[in-house]
Length: 300
Picture 1: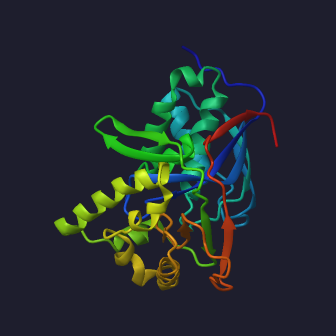
Picture 2 (picture 1 turned 30 degrees about the vertical axis):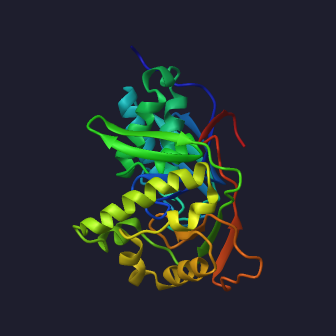
């Protein structure tokens, strides 16, 4: 069947995300109310990408942009490539800080490309979009909440990634502390050992299960539910400021964790009014995004 591209632009709004949430390594994620907006349109030739906000002047403005890479992969899956593309990106998610900027770009690209194909949703349903996004990202813990919204549990089967989204208890009000320094997931993963003690794996399994209950039903248990023994201590030498802030918050009875691969810190319980993180940190109180990525026809 020939592919028909839709006329005019499509806009995709994608939320920031925080993955791992302490013990839920590569499995648990949360969508946060800070968004990137991407407007995409098929053109007669060439690729043009404009970026304002976070990453402006640094991100590629051509085929090398991650959104374009994701769009190309999606068009391939749908059976056709357009002659050209024009993208306008308004970025509010900090780059390389542990808030899912790369997953947001991938999800935006997948959904934009699907929306630009006349029967894209019939050819690629949401489950297939998740599988493709997770394949492009390498793991599903950030792309799942970005797509689905809310609190997600993601896993990978032989056929690809799957995920479910669960409602979060109203008392959970996340706060993020974003440093000026950046971090790369690849570097953070390189700090992890190839094997872990059985006792550590068992501890994290129990805490991750408890975290599901704490986030959805009993936030009073968030502090013990966010204890991790698999990745945070191992990554601490590479981001000492992050480790120190997590420790200070937890000493104040705040359920604080490293957001994704860091260096951002995520607090899942209320931060005391007098707590001072220091001038090196931007502090944002963010709502939970319950709807996930949205496709809207037209420009901003």
